[in-house]
Image (cartoon, rainbow, N blue to C red):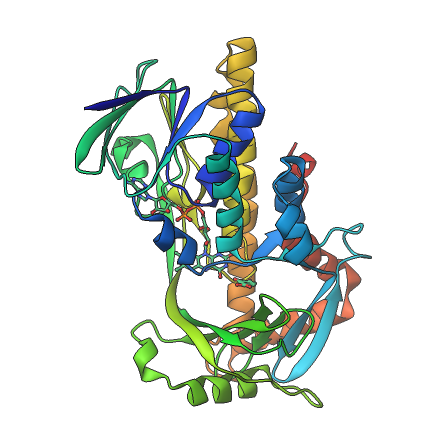
Length: 396
Ligand code: FAD
Ligand code: DHB
């Protein structure tokens, strides 16, 4: 039986767990991470790519953004399409110079893992957390398995950064929280392709055949998505069909979509989910463990990093001042931004997806919103400030 003692036991080596560990280290607080999957699996998992200004600033302040600054692409605006009409929302003027950066989630995960492991810290891969106990005491424990051996992490706090299907939320008593959820009647088919992006900025498009998004990863790699039915499967789509559909849905006069070899295809279901309490005793949840947003607007990863900021504030207060006050306020503070992001992600999702008959009343409402963005600087500002992410001070 392996026993590890640390101050904060972290479950999950996704963006939330890795950011937390590296940040706590900078504050002189020790932690250990255990991750269910292998390093290869975690680092090959293709997910988000849009980093808010807050996230980039945090990684820079931690000294962990060298490659992000070199390889990430800062964007100063976003294109929006509706029925083939394209408008641009510029960020600079509307958000006091705040921007977004495109840099793949798995690159963030690689950078943070490397910094942690090269700094001599402990991160056990293929080490699932099996059970948590002592959550209501000052010495909670994580029971885990690694290389066929059982182990225990003895710590002061447990941070469950273990994603939507993790153990953390399941270990809270059912009456400790209320859960809220929306399941959408569509999914995203996402691709990565070896082809130069067809636009220097992202394009979100409503089309009567369904939503499409043009994003990118580098000068040579494009990332694109189309709305599909929930029961669809990647095998139902040839590469030609995907390019054809993207070209129709993203199309606007005088613009051409580049196509090239597709090297990754996957389908992601869409849901909005959150719980109204992210703490039970000495257990704290962060990131997807506590909330999911539909990906339209790219908030998932950024919310995970924002949770971590509040957790670090709480742990720092505890170890400096021996006070649980900030930690006990964690849910309340984090939930302000979570609600905002839930609303924005739902707004972007319902604005750009095909859910209602073309020409119907609901469709006209979607179109009215789009038209309003193009004619009102106030409305465009609302979209822009949510898209680049509100500063921490905005929530008090
Ligand atoms: P995760 O990244 O899920 O990390 C949790 C980690 O915990 C995982 O590595 C998991 O293996 C580990 N774990 C789970 N259980 C245990 C256990 N018992 N013991 C030990 N470890 C455990 N967001 C966007 O903004 N845009 C997108 O395009 C987008 N696409 C997505 C596609 C998919 C398929 C998914 C699932 C999510 C997507 N997201 C997207 C959301 C975004 O990627 C997440 O919000 C982000 O990964 C949250 O980070 P996290 O650290 O909270 O959770
Ligand atoms: C990406 C994903 C999103 O969900 C989004 O809104 C913008 C960009 C991306 O993967 O690049």
